Length: 519
Image (tube, rainbow, N blue to C red; front, side, top):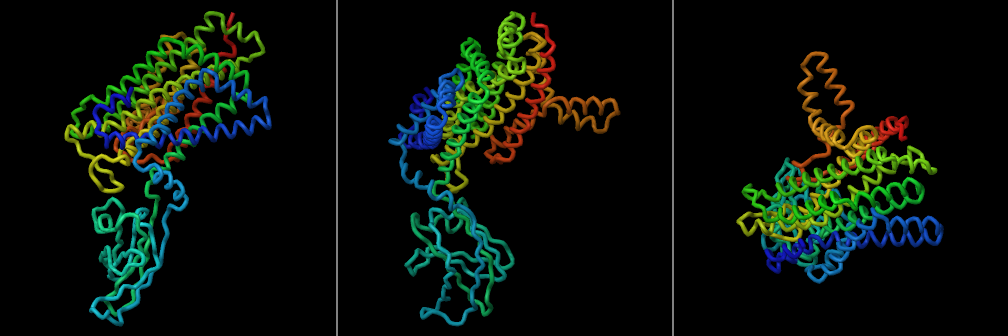
């Protein structure tokens, strides 16, 4: 639906840019799927029993809808190839990714001893050669002034020149409006020379940073890693914990078939489509508001689904004696609670994957829609204004860490909701969990305000900070909206915090559920 709506407000050129920005994700999904298939084939040959469990998990209520979404992305990867302008050039950039990086060169420029026949200062080769399409950054620190010269390999004419001042660090990047960004011919091997018009030798340090022509191709590997990790984690869970996985599958089957889940999924997907056309009156900053609002909508819908699922699958089953019937089988209370929790996490994951299928295309199409209203956009890496597939892809990729962090925040709140569901009904669960959500965001402010207060106030503030999760760390809307890169270390630490807090919540849930009279 989003591609059809987006098509009507795009020119054919912009449509190609839009498809290309999403095509990389589709190719990554295909690559990740191939990795999963190869791993499954090897497992089938070595341990058929475990491979059969993986197959059953693939047909289950969690992986099956996720796989359907992945097939849609794979279709975008296959069919989008016909709309992408330079598919082979982008794919060839994958080969160059291992060679990306910075190299430091110590250069020595001899003193001027003789002029050329035409009276010009001779250019001394620095033995530094780069591909003009891959040159990303130059950094030079020198003791004296000299001229840096660039020439096409094998050609005597200068194609670019710049004066390096003494005692200062000179820097150029591809997005600068300076000399090289406009004068270096594309697709050429370029070598650097230096001209010294003084009678003193010059020493300098020159750092050359190269990256593939289409560095955006790294998204293919990143997407493949996410897809493969998702399947491998759930396959391992199904293989080694079959009873708990069976409870998770039963929970997911029940909750995904609920009207509330379908309603939340439809609301989330429709909002992402409508958000493309909503005027936010932000003077060209609509894309930032769309990112922020989209993540907030995913969080709220995920919380509603998680709280509802924990109440209906735990509290209602306890009250309806269904849990007693299940626990009469060879299933422990620990397996029951953990299976329910992971099943709820799976339901939330399905919801997020479905909404993301519409969210990413919406983010990619928003700049083109806004450009018709007079908004201007600039791709910082090239320093060029206007719509390009690189710009659209960058805007889309910036959202992915936000989706991951919002999902982790929802997992933390789901663990709290599961613990509450072992003792309290749905209404109390909603009130307490949303209270934890509100207080979790206010905890840093409470600690700051209470720092100069009375001791009882400090004690209460410290107690709240110890018990409640610091949810503010998961919501970095400002960085995501501004397009700032979110370090992988930050996401990793956030995931570790979410896991540890969820384990603590599960421990509390087991304590509360252990002596609960189910009869």
